[in-house]
Amino acid sequence: MWGCGLMAWQALGIAETPGLVAIQDARVVTVSGAVLEKGTVVVKNGIITDVGASVPVPKGAWIVDGKGLTVYPGLIDALSTWGIPESAGAAPAAGTAGRGAGPATPAAAPGAATAAARSWGPQDRPGTTSWVRAADLVKPTDRRIETARGAGFTTAITFPKQGLVGGHGVVVNLGGENSGQMVVDPSAGLYLSMTPSGYTGYPSAPMGILAYFRQLWIDAEYYRMAKALYAQNPSSIPRPEYDRALEGVLEAKRVMLPAANPIAMERMLKLASELKSPFVFYGVIQGYEMADRLKQTATPVILNVKWPTRDRDADPERVESLRTLEIRDKAPTSPVALAAAGVKFAVSSDGIDTPKDVIRALKKSIDVGLKKEDALKALTLNAAEIYGLASRLGSIDKGKIANLVVTDGDLFDDKTKVKFVLVDGVKYIPPPETPAGPGGGFGGRPTAAPGEEN
Image 1 (cartoon, one colour):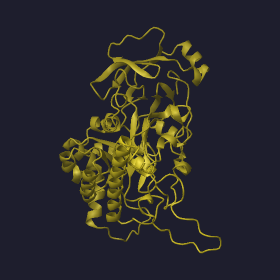
Image 2 (image 1 turned 90 degrees about the vertical axis):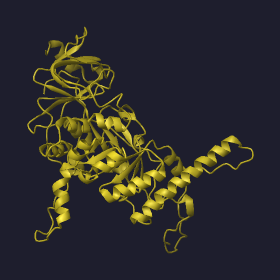
Image 3 (image 1 turned 180 degrees about the vertical axis):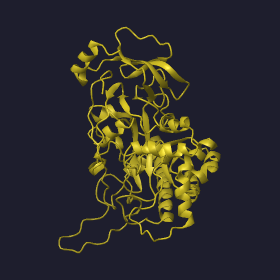
Image 4 (image 1 turned 60 degrees about the vertical axis):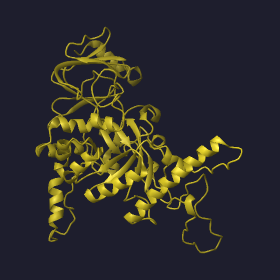
């Protein structure tokens, strides 16, 4: 029902978004339970207050006619950089020190030749910015956000990725007028990389990087014990020097570890047992070979769905190895294998050109055997569960945040259009589709609340 009051609502603008909305008679895919072929979802002040097949519409609610529409939980990008402008995520110099302030290397005397950077011992932690928090970097002005919403994404787990230890991720809703309104959880995990961006120097070989990670966690444990001892007897035990790098390690809820293939997986399983921190694997392109071991170790996974393809600039006469061809052919079956093994997995947009390509990649996996319900869980509830946010995100249930996607058909149908999304109960309409330009061609602006026709 599109009433005259609804037109008045549109004229009010964003600041006057109604606090009570009902999407009525729509197909509702709750994810956590049965699909409602004709259901109603009630939203009040950004929270889902009711959902069901025979839910009464509260008096005074703005009604959205859901006939012919399908309502899904808002999609979640489980490992992203959305919300962090490129300049905000710039990598620091390789010699950045871990303790307090001050350079890792002394300034050269005027006129003197620049000396090679030297290590100053434990306080010199190259490639480490474990004190950096994506929650302090995200901005609603990141142009990629609107395009992400246009594909149905309402939440992203965003990480700073510079160096070996990039920093702490943040769970953000892809809406709001300022950074504070975006943040759902300011501490999602600490991002580690074996192939760091913006960093050169020692360590660089895999064995050296793994040894560096181990030493960093050993140092952090000694630092923790030193602080505890000092707290017990500050009059007779020297006060430990503040070390912001080790503080960042100790504050990690979980550690994000790269594991693209079986060899990397075994290395990371061994490393995780030594770090003694909760961990999540990301990458897992060769999940079709790794599923049983991941299930055996109860390891949650953030799957990179940028399936490998032949480089368009590659020499057409170069003969590729059988192994390369096999990985390229079987990578899209990784979600199938992970789901069959019972491995909890979510998906990442990392390296993908546009957000819609994430859904297209999963569609390719559906074509080779992935169940649609497993694909949808990977985009919603699984991600929320991996990050400990299933009580707030990931499904259409009473009491959860009103992050919803309203489409005119099946999410994985190429012809389906996203009509609008709700982020914290506020409506956003997809922007016109345009070719991706610099930075992905992304832009963003909120629209009026639910009820406005496209």
